[in-house]
Image (cartoon, rainbow, N blue to C red; front, top):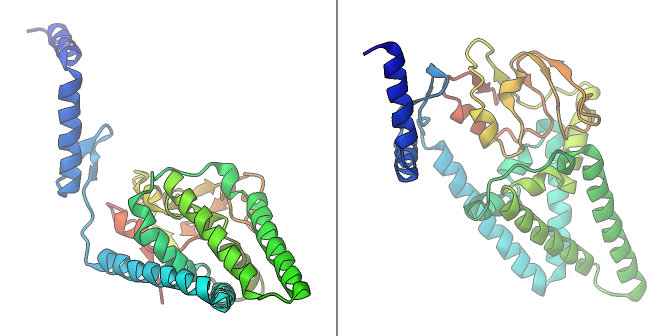
Length: 301
């Protein structure tokens, strides 16, 4: 059989494949990925996609987040009966986010935030897992959300003070409304969509950048080995802040949403040298665990 005849036979065979057979092949491919069996994509043998080995850290983190989620629901329930709890909770969490932010960036948001635990532990199960549009995480959007939230809170506190009411009610209202918005965004997009515009997170983000400008050592950052990175993009699919760590290997990058980055406001690019220095990085190491070539690392010391 000639090469042309062989090619024609392959084309005819491909055309004869039914939708059902294609579905079966797709299901089999998904099963292979789920069970950790290697398979090759269209780029050939250089990109083996295999399920990363879990040393138990992922399950431990998710268990801790579920506990934080339960604690947050308990906080909301207690605040309904005692609005003072809401005042202490909101002020305490915001102060912790800003305080930790000066030293560790947005470490608080991933490891300590009770609402983050609710979103990761439970809303994740209902989420569509879609990326947010670029305008959503634009610095102007974040500033507008923060100014609106703090403005409404200030107005509510002033009204409560003038009328002799409880100062905890405005905090309870803010906590309840923002949580509802966070859950809706988490279902429509991905579970941490709210964290891209969270006022406390924005403050933490800004404080860390200011601390860096004043000479403070930067928070732990993910580093990219340009020689090991194969640009498969898997790190970007698991990042809850929608950062693409692989793009920081070398060359230029656009930091959508990074308030103090030259590329954050206008979408312009800047030079990078293998360090993911985006201020919204949660330091969760999900990208490090997902990388099939061990091109990423996070030094937490």
